[in-house]
Image 1 (cartoon, rainbow, N blue to C red):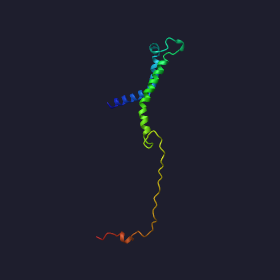
Image 2: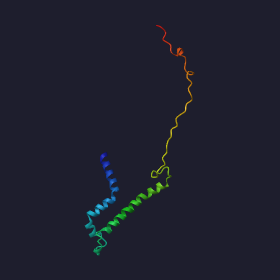
Image 3: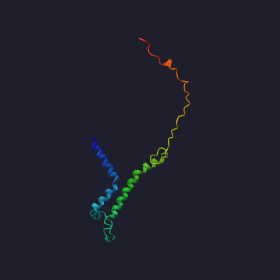
Length: 124
């Protein structure tokens, strides 16, 4: 079930992404039908329109739909401050690590005498 849903979503994304290309393919496959039904310049064959006027109108409609759907998102992103806007390039921040500095260690002052620390166990 999950794989069917994943394939469906990926197909929808690809259809949305390649919508203009699908219009071009549809136009080339059905150019004779489009010329016969929708061409405005049927009476003037010397223009060699061949349905390109209809195709230009369809492309313009597609661009308007895309601009309408992208318009609110652009406005919202422009209202965001630059720090929260994911589309604005952010300056690179370099983290510099500073090595900690320790005081000098005096040898022998912190060590306990060996006899006080290490004693053999009392005899059994």
